[in-house]
Length: 330
Ligand SMILES: Nc1ncnc2c1ncn2[C@@H]1O[C@H](COP(=O)(O)OP(=O)(O)OP(=O)(O)O)[C@@H](O)[C@H]1O
Image 1: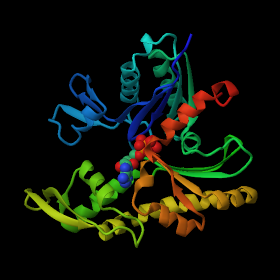
Image 2 (image 1 turned 90 degrees about the vertical axis):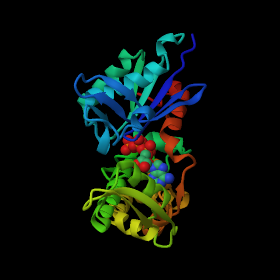
Image 3 (image 1 turned 60 degrees about the horizontal axis):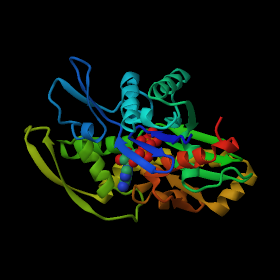
Image 4 (image 1 turned 135 degrees about the vertical axis):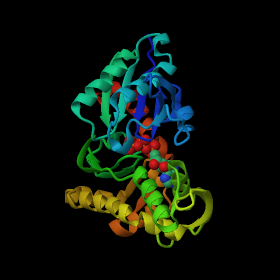
């Protein structure tokens, strides 16, 4: 009987689900809205994201996996179950195998609980895989050959840097500096410079539309609204690329530093391969303006933004599941 195997990118910012034969069927933010009094889940995904920063006192819209770790396990489990149930796995001809990629820093207890949540939702066999490996595969790298491949995956909560060869990670580093940190840097800068309070979503919009991390990068401006810290009233200001670039500088150099230290620990033969093939950027942070140019300048190797960086992990799960009979998953 044909089972539609399922791949899940359980990211701190977004959850993507890939179903064999269908491609990516679900792509939603990792947000859950909860009624504080009854602890009832009111909304999950995009519907819950619309509520962030806009809820009345008794409702909270939370990101259960903020900062690259599972901050609230019960809510993460409820979210995972909600998304799998949406696929109506129980209506499949036979139980699917489920491959889940989750944040790199989670504990073995959390891993076990994620497995159990997926099993309860109807999975026959559950596999967990490391995110940088799967994103490298999704970016089109052939990591199963005896040659060096380097990937820098900049997500919402973590940046994972890894050198892979023969299907496994040779050297790697994971830091809790990624998209959320950049948003927070922008919020703090606007607060300090303009005495203006802005929400999470405004900070993210500034990062995407005006932000740059390369000195000769884009030169844009944008009007933003927030609450004046002195008068308490709404106020509009205009921000420019250069000032946002300065606000992001410190965090970006932590990413550069992580990439450099992984390269420094890489065996020379594999380093030579990386010079030939270049470094691939995956995850939403790969879309940050100028990040490819900055890394190329600092690492002295070619750097490429992969096609569809936000989808690499989900695409990678599909490729692994297609090759499951070759023993690519344990
Ligand atoms: N155009 C863009 N410019 C800059 N950042 C962007 C852009 N598009 C998305 N992002 C950022 O990418 C991040 C989300 O990326 P992604 O979905 O790869 O993370 P994730 O897989 O959920 O997180 P993690 O890998 O930490 O678990 C968010 O911080 C988002 O703001």
